[in-house]
Length: 347
Image 1 (cartoon, rainbow, N blue to C red):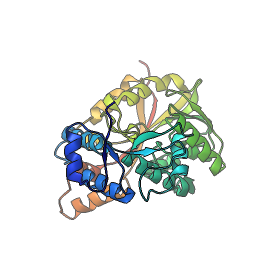
Image 2 (image 1 turned 90 degrees about the vertical axis):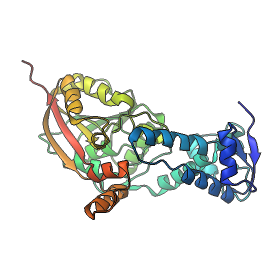
Image 3 (image 1 turned 30 degrees about the vertical axis):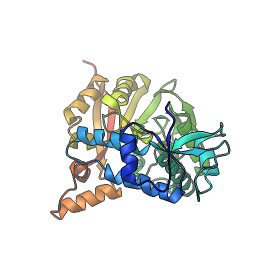
């Protein structure tokens, strides 16, 4: 790989952008806080417009490529080679593990590592649990806890064995365990498995958390999954919790869930309809995927998102103001549903 171009406090965001667009990677060796300002200016300059979703994602991809071209050097003990840099050793150890020599990382990534440590320490309040979930770096935080409310309130005939597929932080596994289920939670990410185990222990709840690609061995009375909602290609690390290219995980889950159900069992699919409002997947397509998996809709409950961006978008629409773009308009109409699915009757 090419040797990065060394830059410092004398460089403006405009000059940095020109160098990046000529194909250079930039090694920041100036003041830490000035470097943050340059990165922030690059992000603002390349902020995607929301004209249509495909254009928005292309612009978002370009923004990330440019911003991630500004690098800093960290040594084997996670010292940062920049003036007035904070002590990031604990944050990096939590995110990366034991150091493996000097290396270059995007300054923006390092800022994310710092933010992730702070979020992990304070946690995210989940009303359905009456406690906090502490996300690890690279594991999607349950800041949208309304889907946990859906699982906590959904009607039950009985409790038994439950699978939580794609558990992430373990938030839904915790809700199910609190409702009395014997829970096996799965995730393909080792980070997520460790994170979920830690959260369940912290909450005083019991569940088996195993690394698996979708389903664990055996069958369950209830199988729960909150897959990524938007059928588009992920760009960054956390995008994988939101973006599912060609609905691959959703398709695989729905096609295999019935084979892992006990007689009389149900599948609970938690899904936002944001993709429908963006024109990326229709309701008919979702229902056909459910049907093709040998499942039928037994019921559905829904809730409006409480997160700040959705509330702001709804307020703007309700007040007759401008929606703020394609995504803002979609968020204003977004509903999260818990689809209760049962094996379809064979004719």
